[in-house]
Amino acid sequence: MDSLTGLIAGFGDVLTPVNLLYVFIGAVIGTAVGVLPGLGSAMAVALLLPVTFTLDPLAALVMFAGIYFGGLFGDSIAGILMNTPGNSTAIAGSLEGHRMARKGRGAQALATSAIGAFIGGMVATALVVFFAPALAEWATKFGPGEYFALALFAFIATSAVVSESVVKGAAALLIGLVLAMIGTDEVSGSQRFTFGNVALFDGISIVVITVAMLAVGEVIFVASRIGRPDDRSFTPSTGRPFLSMAEYREALPAWLRGTAVGVPFGVIPAGGAEVPTFLAFGVEKRLDSRRKVPMFGKGAIRGVAGPEAAGNSTAGTAMGALLALGLPTSATAAMLLAAFQQYGMQPGPLLFDRSADIVWALIASLFIGMVVLLVLNLPFAPLWARLLSIPKEYLYAGIAVFACFGVYAASSAIIDVVFMLVLGVLGFAMRRYGIPLAPVLIAVILGPLAESSLRAAMNNSQNNPLTLVSTPITITLYALLAVVIGISTYNKLRLRKEVPASARSTEEVAG
Image (cartoon, rainbow, N blue to C red; front, side):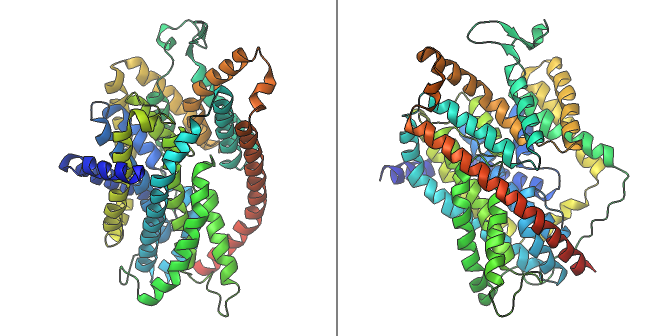
């Protein structure tokens, strides 16, 4: 009952012209960056962080939440119409979605994607309303050992899951931890990795790091590839932009199954929705193989419905994990955590007590944002696809200028722009050699928490390392970590066999 009361009050706070405008702006920006391959909601939030610090906290946060979910809606448009998913989370749904588009059913595929994302997001957000406060209350039992276990869980799970190579994932994690340690040690007051440079005494701003890694690195990477032949082909969206009753009945079970698959993954630091979307795709494919006339490989609507619902349901419960535990389970969630910290708020068990009005208004805005995104995407998805015609030279030049402007506006220090350019080159090198970015961002943001928790745990136990595994919560977290790594390893081995087969099927369809 308290949750419903808080949610009703949240709707009262967010249903104002100004806040509704920011929800709409976030939905539009999120969809736009989702459509454009190479961009993403994490980059959009990173670019806007330095120029939104003067906004009202609620206005900025509801806009960022709109970008978060809008990116997932937009990711699939390019995948379905061009076979070039805007983000890796849209790959699974694009396999059958693009086949539907090539058969003249692109509009129905886009409608299936939009409705699936809507259902998955709404169900997951409803679960957040009822379970996030209880999760936050449970998290008040966390001590230093539990917080260290939680941070370690995020580090290892993310670096092990999001990269095909564990070595590359660990390298990304190490880069993030080194960046997090630059500056003055809060406990001893000593300087670390500053090399005597006064500008580094306060460390490198999270805003500088995220903008450099996500935006500048991508700009340099794209610039290095301009002039190469682009073999992507655009398949126009034709037909009716809605589903018939028969198609709706066909897709509904897959939407529900995909939602059920994606919900638990939102609280697991697995780097995003890649794993649940492929799991949902696999479930639908296995069920389809039992039918008299299998449809997978021919443009199966269930192959779009399941993964799309799984992706957004994962994002919904990830928001609950962020608010209740302060645990970012993806790169975009890590950016949202940075946005909270920009306004002096720390997501976690005390957030529902200290900033309850902000939290419930933010959750209420998620419901409103889902409706706005459905309206924007269901009839207008083909129009969004026209963004793909923007020349890369102009698009990425604008991103570079906006990045420099934002970083300089946040601190009025030219040295931050220099740091941004240097780290941008590092971000480019990471893309060039396939090193994932999500572990870097999560390590930068959670690194200080892990260090302070480890020190506090050791000081309180006279440096007894067993204190780190001395409570039921820590033992459960480490056991769950072992399970996640085991499932991830199994899925990667399985996907290495399935993806080549899917690629061969795609080539046959293209031929």
